[in-house]
View 1 (cartoon, rainbow, N blue to C red):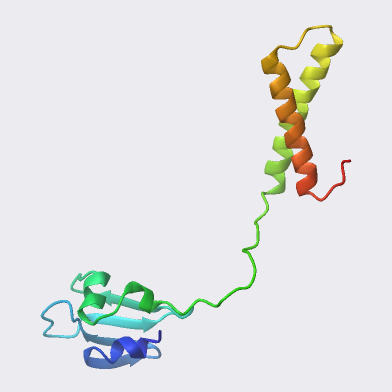
View 2 (cartoon, rainbow, N blue to C red; view 1 turned 180 degrees about the horizontal axis):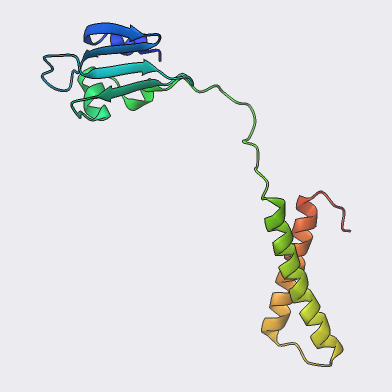
Length: 141
């Protein structure tokens, strides 16, 4: 929506600058214009009542909703891009899981038997390391 759609529903509209207006607030008995309306750089319409009226009350008084202040979303034909974890975090996790595997290997070499809990944790570590390789696109066959 452009600011014009809102401004056409307001009284005593006065332009105060490029993409800026002031008008009487429809949410209270406004004797002197106290509602600021502005076109945002990103296509949003910015609204502020200096008397303190809430945005819901202002828009409700003129038959609009908060969604009307935002530009229409473009239709996308693809899934949102997955954001990768920071490399330092990934390396810390890999380092920790590698330590789990190393401790398990050292225990095995020293002849200490594994408990069921030890085996399960070792398998979790191996699985996480394999997942990290897969996520990085590395063939670990």
